[in-house]
Length: 395
Ligand SMILES: [Zn+2]
Image (cartoon, rainbow, N blue to C red; front, side):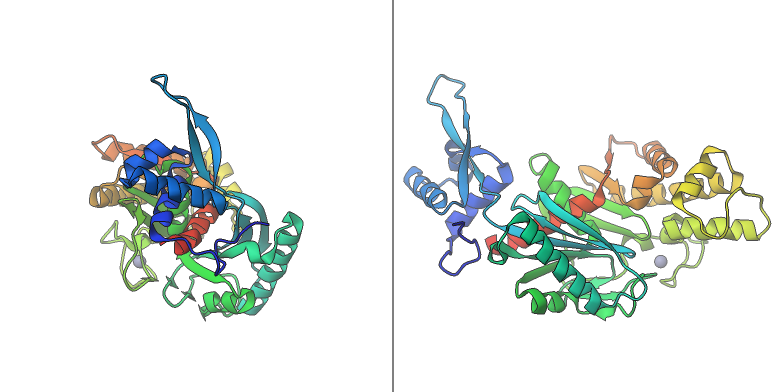
């Protein structure tokens, strides 16, 4: 029977947690490397490893060949199938619920549309029934599930676990919604909450960059704009836990359009999916010729019109990319990170926008800044939320 990381009879000490965390971070690591990183005495480290192996928290996952003809040494990794984590990602028009292992790898995932009549109560019921179906399908016991990591579109209050009042949110009555408490009541499990961008950068960090970079930034652009920052290997958070405005309200044109925040010329007034569609509509209403059908503009329509050289669409996409890239260059100059990741729905679905952003950023930065576009934000958010939840057991 698999022992539970969360069970009361199973408490690991500070040193055990440190070794476990190092093994988790390095994926595969030898005793020699662990000695180097921990500075423990050999006997202490060996005892800890034996203990972790006995408890099935870690496993032997390979043999490292010795370069100097010495004895080959065992490599350890965490036992990723010891426990499982539930991850929920809430966007404006849909949400997903997933089950991951302890490495944040997705084992099963379900997509649900958020309809206009979906209240927070119906959302929680839907999440719970999807959860029950998935653990049954995966043959996982409810007791083996450590808890829930949930990422939501902002603004959110992380400390109170509340979704405040998301702009153009699809569901009904999701204002000051206490989702964390509602999930705790329903599941009787630990719940952590974050915004999408922080979830994503944490996922990217653990999946791809844990050994490479210490400072990273991520910016998501879709129906909204958000940013996450990693400094010294840790996700940066404000003390109050309230994420209200953020990078989307960086002013890139002081004489620009009025924003919902009250200022003028914020990136969000030009570069989100909403802003692009609104601008195209406004140009057509002012009498400019375009092939776009005004009734229901989709990203596919925009891509097609751009390819055909539609004047209105080309100009609006150009401006959107131009203002967004200006904001990104400002951001790079302020935070001075080793790598900037950019992702989200607009990057994933609108190649012309992405290519222009890339071009403008590189034209305006003198240093060799590492800018990487990521393809599947949602999967990274899921993994990142799993890592946040696991952190609560290991700190
Ligand atoms: Zn604003």
